[in-house]
Amino acid sequence: MISACISLLALTALLGPPLDMFTEIAKRLNVICAQLIPFLSQEHQQQVVQAMERAKQVTMGELNASIGQQLQAQHLSQHAQGLPVGPHPSGLPHPGLTLGGGSGLLALSGALGAQLAAKDERAHLEAAAAAAAAAEHHRGTDTAETMNPLAVQGAYPPGAFGLPPPGVNGDLPGAAGYGAGLHLVSPQMNGAAAAAAAAAAGYGRSPVVGYESPHPHMRVPGLPASLQSASGKPAYSFHVSADGQMQPVPFPPDALLGPGIPRHARQIHTLNHGEVVCAVTISTSTRHVYTGGKGCVKVWDISQPGSKSPMAQLDCLNRDNYIRSCKLLSDGRTLIVGGEASTLSIWDLATPTPRIKAELTSSAPACYALAISPDNKVCFSCCSDGNIVVWDLHNQTLVRQFQGHTDGASCIDISNDGTKLWTGGLDNTVRCWDLREGRQLQQHDFTSQIFSLGYCPTGEWLAVGMESSNVEVLHVSKPDKYQLHLHESCVLSLKFAYCGKWFVSTGKDNLLNAWRTPYGSSIFQSKESSSVLSCDISPDDQFIVTGSGDKKATVYEVIY
Image (tube, rainbow, N blue to C red; front, top):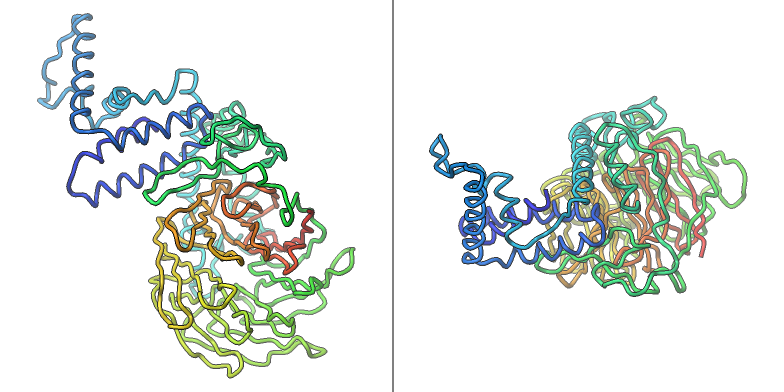
C-alpha cells in the first residue's frame, strides 16, 4: 500500500492541472504514509521516507524511462514464456501496464528505486494495513460518537462526546468498552509483537499484548538522527516542515531529565461522581477538586487520604443536561459553570453554603468550553453556534463576540499576558484572536475536527487534540510543527503544565498521555477503564485530575 502511495505521489507531482485536485491528493497520500510508517521497522521507515522524497522529485523524463524499462522487461518476460504482448482484447491498455492499476503502480514504484519492503517484511506490512483497516471500520461504525461529539440536540444524546448511554456504567458500545473493538497496534510494541497483534486484528480478535514503557531513561547513542526513537521502537513523534515533509524526531539526550520533568504519576484518589464526568478543575490550594457531570458540580476535599464523599453539590443547568466546563477564579472564591444550556452560572464559594450569585445568558443553546483572563475580569465562552462570547465579570454583561468559526467552537485557551485567545472548532480550524484589537490574527486549517487545545504558558507552542487521534504541536510564529501518534482514538482534552515543559492529553482510547514540550517525547502513560473526557493540572504542577466515562474522576500525584 505504501508503494502505491509513493507512486501516486510521483504521478501527482507530474500530472499538472487541475493543480488543486492533485495537491489535495498529494496531501492525503502524505497523511496515509505517515499513519503507516510507525508500523514499519526502523530500517524500512528510513527507506520509506527516502522513497517519498525521491518520488516528489521525479521528472517526466525519468517517469517515461521507468515506464519504458517496465514495458521492455515485461515484453522480454512474456516473450520468453511464449506469451503475446498484443493489445488487450477489450482494446484497453494491457492491465499489467495500466498506471491506474495496482500492479502498474507497484511496478512503477520499483522502477523509481523505492525498494520499500523486502519479502520478509511484506507480511508485516499487510498485517499493519489490516489493523489500520479494522480501526477505520470501527471508527466508521462509531459515527454518532466521534464525528460530532459536541453536538447538542435537546437532551444530551446517548453516546455523544464518546459518552456511554445512561445506565451502562460508563462503558462504550461493544464488549469491555471501546478498547475491546480497537485493533490499532501500539507504536511501543516491538516488530514481532506488532505483527502478531495486527494479524490477530485481521481475524477480529484482540491480541493479548502488554504496553512497554515508552520512556527508557537511557537513550541508545549512535542511532541515525532520523531513526532515533525510544528503545529502538518505531517513531511516534514526527517533525513536519513548512512544506509538509515529515521526519521522525531525534529526541535530545535530556528529553526526560532535568528540573520540572516528571518521572511518572500515581493514582491517589478516586472520586465517584455517579455520572459521566465531562469537566474537572482543581483549586490553586490543591485542596479541592470540582467535577462536572449531569446537572451538577460536586466539590471534593482531597487534602486527606482515604475514601471520598463530596462535601458539596452545586445544582446547575437542567437536571438532565451535562456540565461541559467549570473554571475557578484564581482566588478560589468564584466558580463559573457552563454546559448544555444558554446560561452560565457564577457561584459564590466564599459563603458557608455555595450559592449562585449571577447568571449570564447568550443566544447560543450550549457552551462547550470556558476560559478566564489572567486578571479575572473577563470570561470567554465557546458556543455551539461557533461564536466566542466575551463577558465582563464585574458588570456581568456581554461586551463582545468573536465570529469566525462556521461550526461549534469546542475548545479555548488564553495567553499568559492576556493579549491573545486561541480557539478550536468543529469546522476543522484553530484560530487566534487579538484581544486588544478585537480581530482574528491567525487561522490554521486541518483535515480533522478539533476537540481540545492548550497554549504553552511560556509561549511559542500550541498543542491541539484532534478527532483523528493526532496531537499536533504548532509553533505560533513559524510554519513548522510536531505531530504525535500515541493516541488510538479522538483526543478529548489537553492541558499544559504551568512550567510549560510538559503537557497531558486524554482520549476516547482510555489513555492519559504526558508529553515533553514541544517535540512530544513520551514521559508517562496511564490507562484508565473508560474514555477520559477531561483533565486539569494543579497550579504547582503536583497533581493531575481526570474525568471519565465510568462516572468518576481520578486524582494523580506527579512524581519528580
